[in-house]
Image (cartoon, one colour):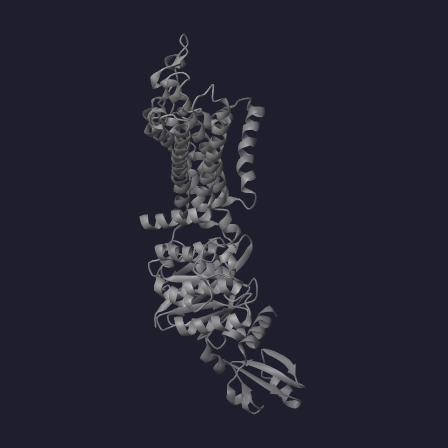
Length: 285
Length: 305
C-alpha cells in the first residue's frame, strides 16, 4: 500500500481561531475515506489545505506534491466537488465540456457524453436552466470523466432529494471507483455513506477523534443493551456513552474485549452515527 | 500554454456577451441613423443633389472626402467611447462575479493557475475587446457605405466615383486600429487597477474602484494644493502620446475656403514611434503589470469560505 496523502502536524489558524489543530494522518490509495464532523469542525479547511486552496503549517503531501505550491500539477490528478453548487450559472453545458476538455489533460469527452446521455441534461442547456439535482449530475459526470487518482467530495449531495442522493453514490461506486482511485468524502448524512466507506475519520474542533478502517471498528467498539443489575455492573466497565431505549440502557464500549461483554447479552457494532455522537460528546466533557 | 489561454479567453467571451453584443447594437443604431439622415436630406434635393455624402453640386472632391472621413471618424468615436465603458465594467466584473456566484471553486478545481486566469482577463481587456471594437467599426463603415451607395445610385449618382473612390478605407481602418490598440495599452494601468479591485472587493466594485481615485485627487488638492494626481492619473486619457500636433493652416486654406487634399488621411496625424518611445506609456505598462500581479496574489491567497 502506498500513501497518497501524508499529513504531519497540519495546523491552520484564522487569527486567534484554530480551525485545524496539529492534525496527522495518512490516506492510502484505493480507499474510500469518510471524513465526518459537525459544522465548524475544520473539515472544509482541511480539505482546502489538501487541495492547495489555502496554505497551512506543518507537513502536507498529496501524491508527493506540496498542494499549495504545486497546485496546478496537483489539479491534474485531483478532482473535487465543493459543498455549494459551484458550476457557473451562465455557461452552456457544451461550453463547459469544451472548456474542461481544453484545460484538463485527463478529461475524456466521450466518457462525459456517454454519462450525460443517461441523464436528461441537454448540451445546449444553460446551467441556470437545470434543477439543482441536474447540476450535481452534470458536475459529477464531468468529474467522473476525468482520470484522476484522488476525488474529494465535500457534502456533494447537500440539498438533493433522496433519489438523487442514492443515484449519486451508486454511480460513484459502479462507474468510477476502482483500486487505482481514492475517494475522500465529507457528509452530514452518515447513514448514506456508511456502507461505502473503507475508512472513517472523525474530526471535531480541529482535532481528529477517530481514524480507523471500517472493519476494525467492530474490534474496538461494542454496543450492548442491558437492564437492572446488569446495567450497574456493565457501567463498572466504563462505557464511553450511555442512552436509554425501550427501558434498557444502551452502552457503548471502547477497547473492552467482546469476551468481557458477552455475559450481558447480544453484542452489536454501533452505527457510525452513534459512535460519532459518543465520540464528540466524550471529547467535549 | 497557448491552448490554455485560447480556452480561457473564449470562456471570457462566453461569459461577457456584451463584448460582441455592444458593437453589434451600435452598428445597428448607427446604420438606422444614417438611413434617417439620408431620408431627411432628400427633402433638400435642390441644395444637395444626391445625398449628403455624395452631393456633387457642393464643393469639390476634398470636401466630399472630408465629409465622409468625418462620418468615419464620428462612427469610430462612438465605438471607442463604448469600448471604454465596456472595458471598465468587464474588468470590474471579471474577478468579482466568480466569487459572488462561488464558481471560483469550480474554476480552481481545474489545472489552471491563478496567473493564467488573470492574464486571460488582461488579454481580453487590452486586446480582445479592442479587436472586436475594430471589427465593429469596419463592419459599420462597410454597411453604411453600401447603404449610401444604394441611395446615391437610386438618385442617379455614380456611387463608385462619389462614394467608394472618395474614401481611403484602409487609411481610416488602420488609423482606427492603431488608436484603439494604443488606447488600451495607454490606459492599461487603469485596467490593472480595476482587476485588482475586482479580485479584492467584497461589494460594489464600481464604487470601490472610483472612490479612492476621486478621494486621492481631492485630498491632494486640499492638503498639498497640487494637482499631480489629478493631472497625471485621472487626466491620463487626454495625454495619449499618439497624435501629432495638428497644424490647422496646413489643412485648411482660409483664403479659398478649401480643404487640403491630404487632410482626409487619418494616418498622417498618428505618430506610432512617439507612442512606442514614450516613457509615460512604458511606466503605465509597468504599473499595469504590478497591479495585475497583486490581483493574482489576492485570488491565490484569499480564503473563500
